Image (cartoon, rainbow, N blue to C red; front, side, top):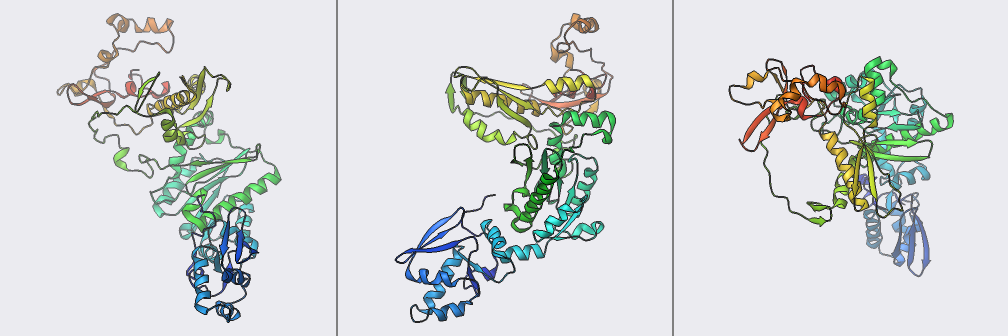
Length: 517
């Protein structure tokens, strides 16, 4: 959460200017430490205030005296206008808020530490109803203890500020229909998976087509759970693995933390971590991590149709100069390895990234040999055991003369693999090679593959004895209907077509019998 220390960012009109019932902001304590000097302290913010008026005024800001009474108490020592000006100055800096609220001091201090005045928090919670589905009662109880309004008919949940669905699996197929309904209704919703050694919840799917939807997260998350997805594909939804490990005390704590983050969002909106991040809580290490979830512009559920329709027009490719900003033993680069890592490291996440992990494999003390591995997310949908085995062994590696070169190399190779994987939103058209003949729009794939006629004629024999990574494709049947995708011809200045299966990596079972590798 990006909250300025000691600064209130969410206040009501009653908390500003001439506060009628002023109180020192609850998370602050004041101490007079010398002649006309007062120290304000808190857990994370301290400041020194000067002046006799401040020293005499702060003890009176106990929330029990109206401003008029405070002015009267200081009459004779300070002009009324000066007292009022001091209150305005303190409220402008977030040191004074209205005491006209119903919170005890500890809860009020919690909210002001997060940047919201108690009145603001009370008002937001009072006007925000939360609908909960799939709960055994524990999450609802924690939400209510935190001040949220919980309940109502879930069938009429479109007026809820937020819908929370407690689940065992973020990738449950039923959420596709839920996501569609929420997008149509414009109702924010979120998921919470409390069980398992790594509890997971968030982000808020805002249903405004500005932030991510469930499908945006599911597309990324499914690539990191390939064995689980394999079980789904071959044995159905009931075979999917659902985390179930739980300790009663830990589970109760998880429900409390989930409720706290949901209530933060109700009060703080975009400043709350769960607004656009999934939060993972590791019960084994007692740690948590936040994973930024980005909206995919080409998402078929919430994205721009012009970016995922297979029949959309292709765009010409124009090359432009790229200044060489970095030169070393590895050659010339448009960016330093450090800049590349800074720009793309957010894509590394086991929840929302395109790369699952990025780790050094050589010894940390080795000053000469730098090798990193990255868990790649090729976007495959394995439906055979052999395909799954190959995919699970698949990793990206990077080497370099420095640690940063090696790390950037591994990251970029993993991103390259992800970018080259077939995902279903590619431009493609169904047809036969002969259909393109009139305008010479297609390139014969056998011409582009550069295999000899002898190899093509004896493909079956060669493939039977060769390595599965080094196979000879069949000759193209010009009358076979396959998918074709555009490539840009620099020599002809136009798009021409090659078989889609030649241009993108995909699991073998995704290829048709007439597709070429």
